[in-house]
Length: 75
Image (cartoon, rainbow, N blue to C red):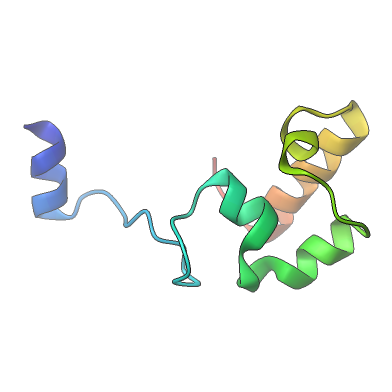
């Protein structure tokens, strides 16, 4: 019931990414969002699998944290 109320009152923001291509989830943001493509290429100079961005060594996690911060995202 409570979830329905939030949807009806629009108290919860849309799960859609501002780019309009997909829902704003970790995979989309870190791998595919066209609005973040240049920042993604700046942080990761080579293709990096999602698993490494989320569960990799400390250096990989620092890059992910930097990406999220510089993109202005809130988690």
